[in-house]
Picture 1 (cartoon, rainbow over the protein chains, first blue to last red):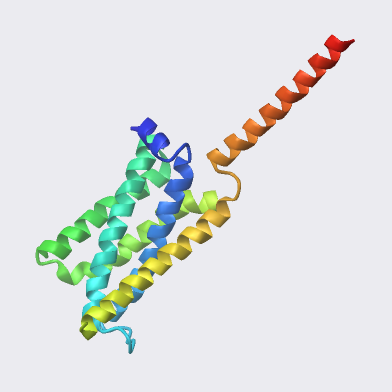
Picture 2: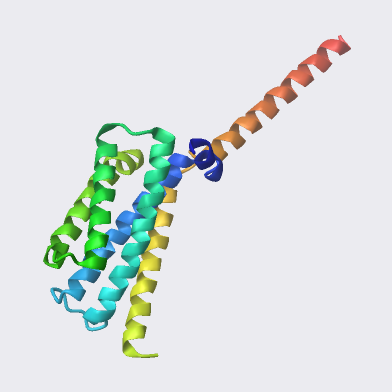
Length: 136
Length: 63
């Protein structure tokens, strides 16, 4: 798998991984604004809560895909070690749980804001322990 | 196009713009450190060294 990733990225696996993680983080920041509009906490004249909620879902699906690709690349090239790997695994697990709550509810819908903020914090930690130090 | 669809399209276009900006900023940070760039630099150095050696050998034969 590591060889496939190296071939696909033409030997730039780290750079591609940093890029994907940074794009995911930038979109996550955008998600905070959009969901604030969807919950009515932030009022923008040009965006109603309903389309904001739909956009949040679509962008969230994109972020989930980016994070899964980044995680697979990371484990296949660098293996599983250190705080970064722990944070990344916790992030993907919590994201999977949040998506299942969004789709099926399980009576846990009221915890979605807390879950979303936790996912964002874990994404920041995961990014800072890898991409952040690479770009610094 | 309804108001809802227009606003949704606008929100998704804004997301696409954010992606483009993130790509530009991060790739600018990388600079000439990518593996492909380094390989081409090394290749050019090798070619220069080979050419220098050839010139030295030619000069030695002439003597």
